[in-house]
Length: 183
Image (tube, rainbow, N blue to C red; front, side):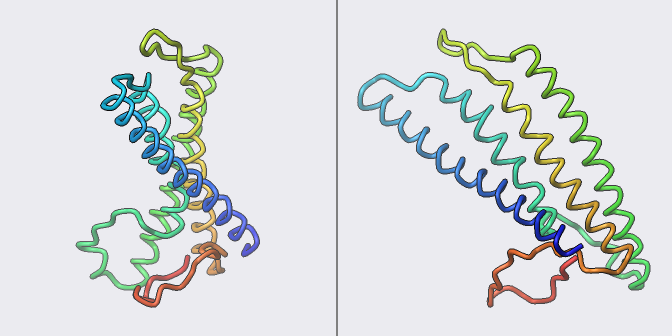
């Protein structure tokens, strides 16, 4: 199971790396648009479309697997922290299973939508030009699929008491507390 977890960690790191590179592309694209607009009065065509449909979608959804792997989603624990340890573990197992199932369902549904957009050749008209947008629809099933796979592996690890092998790419930060469990 550790080998599977390590492989999933590498895939998550790669997807998040792509999102990180796209942040740089976004900054460069917008900066170039601003320079072209104010210095040469010739803005780049479709900048808003590229930012909203391509960059932002990928930046938001590709890292979902890594966020789930690192337990970095927003959580508010008002009551659960007061429950006994066994109840907390049971709730964690249930929540992890629900996360895996729901994100798998979202991945399947967004995958169906992506295939439909691919089949129709979805595009947008921007500044008199045709910009193909169907590839952006495939980012959501990838992101939610990765999150589902991570959740499923975490569920199996929690249910069996074995180490998932996730977080194998961690570099220890001496300034962060060491009490976060690796699931």
